[in-house]
Length: 285
Length: 255
Image 1 (cartoon, rainbow over the protein chains, first blue to last red):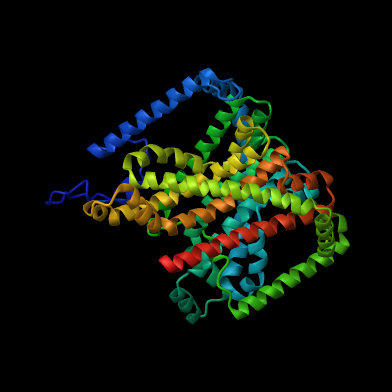
Image 2 (cartoon, each protein chain N blue to C red):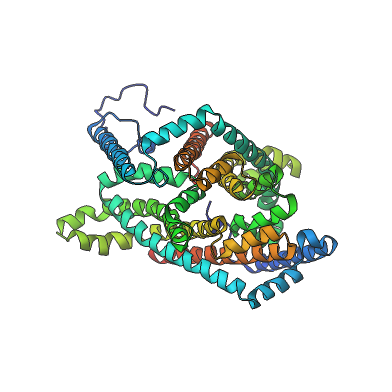
């Protein structure tokens, strides 16, 4: 992880003028040594105080339903956490997302390798897949209701619609970008197709699988929220929906905040994991 | 991942195979539909349903309503996003203060905010438009800021030494330099706005595609369900391809 050389360089290093990738990606709340970073940190703290203060003041003059006070939100958070409502909703939703992501990893790997490896299959199916991919996934909702009703299975299928394509397209891209040299070499030593996939392609697309995993979990979160709105009102989306429709705005703030935290944790955590596991590859997306 | 990996310049063989693929899947759908007509409908009946929805004026009216919300919302998002992005890109302090919040909102599934907007803005068009605007603005701010940061590193000093007034610098240097970035933002924003508009309409039953989806969900009539899904798909595909096309067009020109 540490990119600093172990032996101190004899030359004085210009801390400020060496743009390091790491410093720009550092979490925003961690103060850095160095005047500029420190003033940034102070600025952020001051701004946050102003936002919180303004919020507290504004909440005094309007109804609790429109804008609950920060303290009210804390109280609501305490209630939701101690009653276990928040955690059980998250457990249900994350379970659904887990099943959907697991299924889309398997399907995505199989289909992605097929599409990436055989260009005829790819050309044949590209328009069909692309049109489903570009459809706002919410359009699948009535279809899924028609097939499976409103229960857990319907939710999982709906979330699967969000997760599959992220996985599929990332893996397909990975398979297409496997080095020509490796393929040629594999062919020249007469690797069978199965061996080629197992020994050449699978190891090379491993970083892409990780990226696909991150993207599909994040999209699965969107699916889980929407599933809670429009299918059975359970899980984290259901909690948002119910807090909103019963005008418990403080609860609504808390639940949205928890979604924010989970979203950030997943995206930072998994991209950190990607950097740890495949440090040689910098993948965008 | 970008759309450009999926929608690419057609070559002849790909195009032909693609057409065959579409026809085969439509054929398969038709065949399967005659076995289970109440579960998966079939293309011919979907077309008939679409025509009858179109005749009764439902489809066009709803589509128009959704488009209106989408255009107002996305337009406002573009203006707001560019203004905020220019300021954040140019002034470090603005960036420092603003970016954590933008990142936070960006990383949440935006649909989670929609019930909050119901509480604040009611269930009318204001609510739909505001939801779409906020959804789009956040997506435009991020790339625009990146573009302006790059441009001001390149031209900021030059502008200052030539004593170009600040406003002029924004208008004739930073804005043009940031256009390719803004367009990336716009493409993402259009998708997000469209989804937000549909979800918002669906949630409160406001006139639009969302309401059609909501009706179809409760009717459980296979033909209607699939017809509405196809209409939504067509709208989604049209908008995403159009914005991708515009983005690529300008990317080529401004490089």
